[in-house]
Amino acid sequence: MDWIALTLSLKLAAWTMLALLPVGIVLGRWLAWNRFAWKPVAEGVLALPLVLPPTVLGYYLLVSMGAGSPVGQWFQSAFGRTLVFSFEGLLVASVVFNLPFAIQPMQRAFESIPQDVRDAAACCGLTRWQTLARIELPLAWPGILSGMVMTFAHTLGEFGVVLMVGGSIPGETRTVAIAIYDSVQAFDNAAAGVMSAVLLGLSLVAMAVVYATGARRAGRRG
Image 1 (cartoon, rainbow, N blue to C red):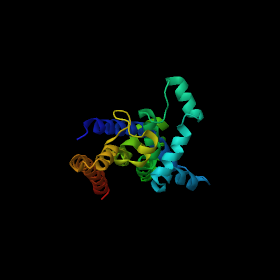
Image 2: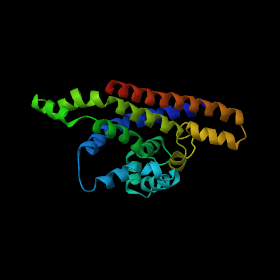
Image 3: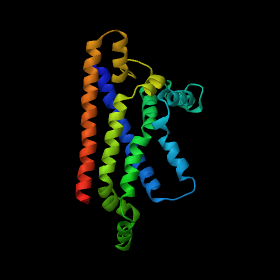
Image 4: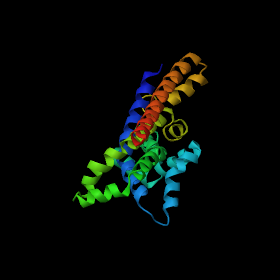
């Protein structure tokens, strides 16, 4: 069992989840309650990681963050190292790749809040921030939780984007998914089996949380 790779994967998943929490709430709420002509385009762009091959998305991220790109040059001048093949670059790629997994459940959760609830909050004198904190977030929390759990679980198992952007640097970018691949390549099926079983268990727990949350929400509605 490669504990360093597993720890790195858990760290990456946790940071990705924390980074996407405010992004998912803001974008999910905005998409839920706004109507505009190019909304399908915006939703399509945010959902692209669901249908794009990971290597394609990884390639574009590699080019956009590479040493020859403005972003890559700024990062190198500021921190003295390249953005790609680093944990920071891996985190940026993970955030981009997980956008739909965080945003879509939150958008559906905000869409389920009746308009008259928001209108009643406004009539009671609550500001937008007070309505968000006291009314909207408590009602939307199952979708927010589902988005965060899905993001965490998906990050743990991601392979293509991680390999393209981060490579396989031990302790820096070698996640448990990459470690499984390396173990199979080295014919170490025992190690690959153990790590695969750990990921399987974590994924099952994550999906159980998502479905349990959805069932509780449906029960309250009923």
